[in-house]
Length: 59
Image 1 (cartoon, rainbow, N blue to C red):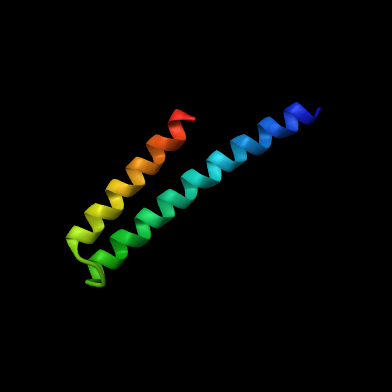
Image 2: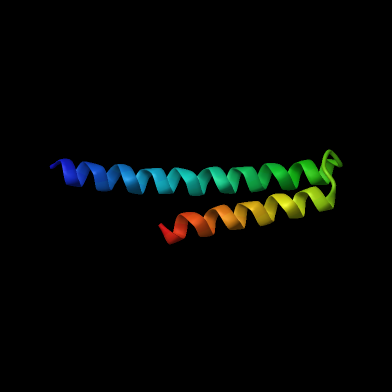
């Protein structure tokens, strides 16, 4: 029972991490459109997000 609960919590954690990454990306795009951040900053954020997602995929 506890193994099943642990597996479910792990899946939930990865799901929430994915949702947060998508929300962050949407927020960054919206800020870019409004001129609050530069294209260079946006590219750095996107690169960082890709790196973090790759890190989570490897584990």
